[in-house]
Length: 67
Image 1 (cartoon, rainbow, N blue to C red):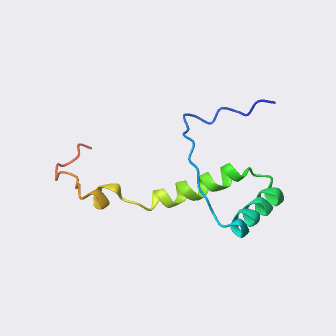
Image 2: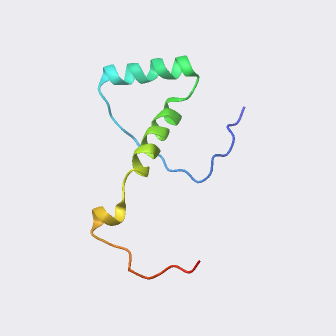
Image 3: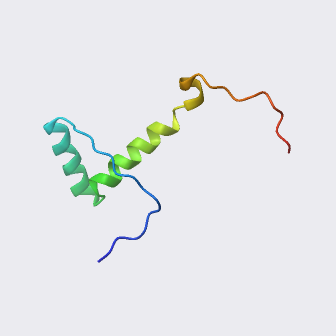
């Protein structure tokens, strides 16, 4: 059965220690979530905490926003 469309997505690959991979697999088995979905949620939650403008040295121009 085909998977529902989840929008435009990109594939990323990570390598973790074998014990961590086994723990992820066990969690996936228990919850019924795919490993990919679990890792995606973790990455997305992490990315929400990052302010790219601050890291890259770019700052927003001090222009008042119209309400």
